[in-house]
Image (tube, rainbow, N blue to C red):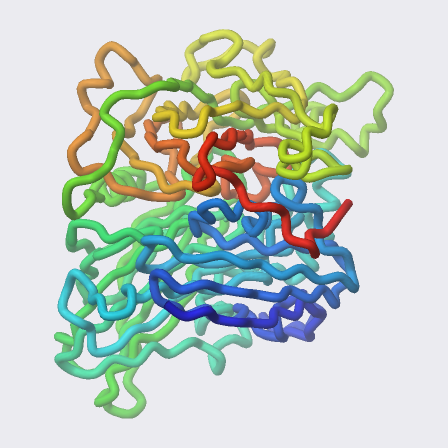
Amino acid sequence: AKTHYHDFVVQETKVTRLCKTRTSITVNGQLPGPTLEINNGDSLVIKVVNKAKYNVTIHWHGVRQMRTAWADGPEFITQCPIRPGGSYTYRFMITGQEGTLWWHAHSSWLRATVYGAIIIHPKEGGSYPFAKPNRESVVVLGEWWNANPIDVIRQATQTGGAPNVSDAYTINGQPGDLYKCSKKDTVVVPLGSGETSLIRVINAALNQQLFFTIANHKLTVVGADASYVKPFTTSVLMLGPGQTTDVLIKGDQSPGQYYIAARAYASAQGAPFDNTTTTAILNYQTAPNGSNPIMPNLPAFNDTKTATAFTTSFRSPGKTLVPTTIDENLFITAGLGINQCPPNAKNSTCQAPNRTRFTASMNNVSFVLPSNYSLLQAHHQGIPGVFTTDFPARPPVSFDYTGNVSRSLWQPIRGTKVYKLKYGARVQVVLQGTSIFTAENHPIHLHGYDFYIVAEGFGNFNPKTDTAKFNLVDPPLRNTVSLPVKGWAVIRFVADNPGTWIMHCHLDVHIGWGLAMVFVVDNGVGQLETLERPPEDLPVC
Ligand code: C2O
């Protein structure tokens, strides 16, 4: 196994999109940032130097970080931010994961432009569980704002309202030829007639679940979130932010150009919706000159049926390690709400409907980041007063979560509350979406772990009847589950990685409103279960 060394310089870069040029925060001047290409079993040493004017951290999304929680990256969870002028070196290993992951800033809205792909090839001497493709490409889906995204979220935070939606969806940083001033930079993905290509699709969008398709080509899904899956064929993918999907395509169409396209999937009733489409071009190397790309069909933005048919098609390829008995059984609601405006607050700070402020919570707790220490530091050094260990294992009151809910349930409490798990505990979490104020989808991401999705469904989870639907044979292993609108999902994992691990909605607008909680996994007694010592250069607050 190799060790790979990289320098990531976070810096201001002039970027032109949609006919306008603005200063953008990038890594090494690139948008998307550099792709990390490694083998399973390799180690990475990445020195991040902050030359921008904002605090920053980098998170290696989906990397297990076994015993290396200090390298996970979410600000104030596992480290204090890297200040302007500062640096921090992330050291970690890839342990057993193969496929596609990605990295992104985990600080305010910086990840809008600070992100890139992580390609994990099979371990040295190993091979794919499918015939070796002739070529490989990466397709990273993103979002672009004409304004500085940091200003967009700051304004929303000050007013209590919803932030402006993005001005374009992007593929590898480019809106594509359906947007103005974007044609000449449209991304081209090459393919030869008769060839097979592995396309690694990543949803790095800030706030949007996306449908994805390629005109006239069947997509054979072979992996997701750096785990292989039992191959299945589809014409459309749906990815929540944070999720990756690896597909094989075959060059079996007549030589020409075919659109690769992505468009919003959202079924928030009454929420602003942008129905534009980002495109790239799949180009047969033998395509005749001047051919017009063939257009695909994409599902409508509210096509929950197609989205659900896709997300429930995943199976693990062989026998899994899904826990069949559990030690910890949590029931966690996830949803949006609104807070009444404090009596003496200015109207300008309460711009959500009827003079309120938007909020979000899990089990009625709106998560607040600490500011003087990271949670991991506080936990490791026993610093009191940084967090409390009273995150509730179930909601304070049970109610009709997906029905019409009483206004009294609209007022979550704020706190830095964590839930302690014993090292090695077999954990089940029932994630229940709520329709307090409004129902939305929530791509829920857990740091430090992959989890099995054993079931999902609509309405309120019913422990009497829904447990019969659990797949304890070949459930898929993921790091992000797309919690259906007005629905639920059940995940299981073994708490075998010590640290402080945030679980949150991967729509960044929802994190800011508090849709997060943290698991603290205690050190075990043995050497192997213990967290490593903090690195010397760990940033302090
Ligand atoms: Cu990809 Cu906490 O994030």
